[in-house]
Length: 283
Image (tube, rainbow, N blue to C red; front, side, top):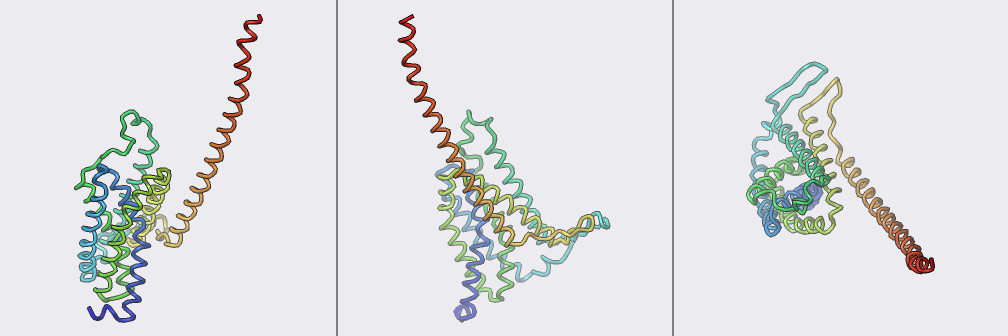
């Protein structure tokens, strides 16, 4: 453990914790949305157990990746139809591709569910439990492992000291446990931001699919699949947030204008309604 406290390793550890926190945002968002599928009194426990198990499995994955990183990168299946389609799949690319497709499907399904009004009378739209505790925990752990690959490979690129990488993973995991309830509570109190969160999750899926396609050297009609840059991803998120804020304020303005117009129409109609009986008796 003495090697952990060198100046170089402490600086690397700080960088890794920051990197884990940034890369873990989309993971935290998925955990908050997935935990809503269980009964409300179980949601906090599901998030904590899911993240706790994910930390342990992430440490195991880190050890496995370090020992067998070449195997993860070595292609085991090739598709070649000339310029029409070419891809060389390895374990890493398949995991990232599958995770991206699953997240896109999850976000799309949740967006459709939020737009549906057929279930309002049944009370399903109020967020009733749709998944068991064990099932939700398994989904959180599985998707956490998908998100783990980027952070683990980034850690390996920055240092070869296992203690530094493992400490960063544990600290970032504890941060996720602390912040998970806060994010979930915020989304619960601000339901409109759920839509924003789902679209961010959708873009996360697109980013993972592009990354998986790049890792598989995927090309179609002579065009290679390029990974979405992290800077592009965060730029899109900033634009989505700005649009959401602007739209929210504009909606408040429209609501105020409608309320004012309704009050004015009611005030104008009141004297006319009061005068009508008198006019009728004179006749």
